[in-house]
Amino acid sequence: MVSSGNTAVFDGPYDDPSGAAPDLADPAAFVEHDPYAYWDRMRRSEPVRWHPPVGGRPGFWAVARHRDVQNCYKDAARLSSARGTVLDVLLRGGDSAGGRMLAVMDRPRHRELRQVMLRAFSPRVLGHVENAVRRRADALVTAVVGAGEADAARDIAEHLPLNTVCDLLELPASDRPLLLDWNKRALSSESAEDDPFDALEARNEILSYFVDVVRERRRRPGEDVISMIAGARVGDEPMTEDDLALNCYSLILGGDESTRVTTIGALHALGTHEEQWRRLRTGGATVRTAVEEVLRWVTPAMHFARTATADLRIGPAEVSAGDIVTLWNISANNDPAVFARPRRFDVGREHNPHLALGHGPHFCLGAFLGRLELSAVLDSLVRRVHRIEILREPPRVYSNFLFGHSALHLRLD
Ligand code: HEM
Image 1 (cartoon, rainbow, N blue to C red):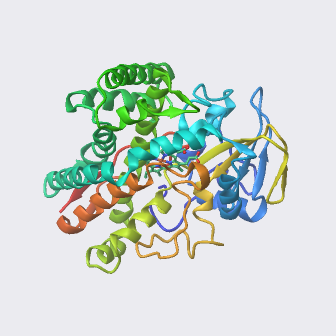
Image 2: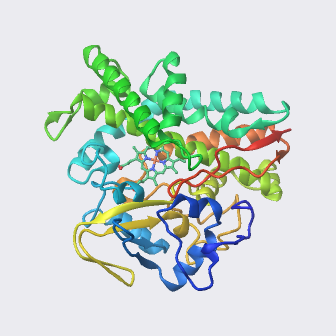
């Protein structure tokens, strides 16, 4: 049993009374055990913990408290994103897209590119996407209601985020099945057996697809987002085709998996907390507060990471320039110093300053879109569904970065 209920159940090294730390770099530690009690202990006893080097692998800091995590997100001047923002990538030597892709860039170039990419999220562009998102979410939910057993991952969650980004980028419907397949292979983290070379190949397929699209839009610019970015200048120069492709891909990367697992997590949480589902369905709480609580409860990106560019103090720890610093959103979002009864799923929670979408200069670019997709699904559920019945305990995603379920068998009546 994992993260479904109000109580964390522990049965392994996370609960080791000797205090031995789990290897936060090892996905197995996250899949086999429920992490909440571990982070409770860390926030109390070692809120900024040094994980020493193992073998040839560098050591890293793990920051657990909400206040410290939030301050680190804000301190982009001393905590750089340019070498990479995921622990695994940093331990393997850094991100090859560093300095070229929005998420793994520092100021001043980050600020300039972000301004350009934010145009993709202007009300004019999003107004057009919003209707399509609501229609699609409703059609997906409607198809499952009363239809017997369904897999929320395959039948609902999988179709929404990628199609939304494709709408935003105006990619033809005929290309989408291929993109979905590549993207699943590129991000696949369902088991320890997944082949990293297959993932790399799929990523290269996506990038070369976008290089072709970028070339085409540069030749024949339209009103769409890719044409908009392709025509912009960053640092007084037009961006290269490769960098443009990388940043188009970053919208899929950022937008797909996180929204997908959060949608699955929303259905799981509502299906396992009947009283909260009743409360939402009968108007005792709003979809707006429920979306924020789902984001906090699921916290799909368990951590993000930075590299210190100067010596600095984080909470009680002295961090040196060059150190890797991991910021554990999953811990911050369950910090009782900020959230009353954090392991209570409360769809009406009003004070909810969660960090599921990050904070500061790198705050999620697609936050509006992610929230829109979640609220479209919840709106449709509230209108059309009486009972959410979870049929089996769902499998967890195999990752030390992404928290969630890769399948969810349920019945919607
Ligand atoms: C950044 C989470 C949806 C695109 C981030 C960050 C988080 C996050 C935590 C900050 C990373 C950091 O500080 O290093 C989520 C979650 C989502 C979601 C939980 C859905 C539930 C989306 C969507 C898109 C998107 C729908 C695009 C369509 C991005 C991009 C960045 C980002 C491009 C980098 C921003 C920057 O570095 O300036 N996201 N995201 N995200 N997200 Fe999202």
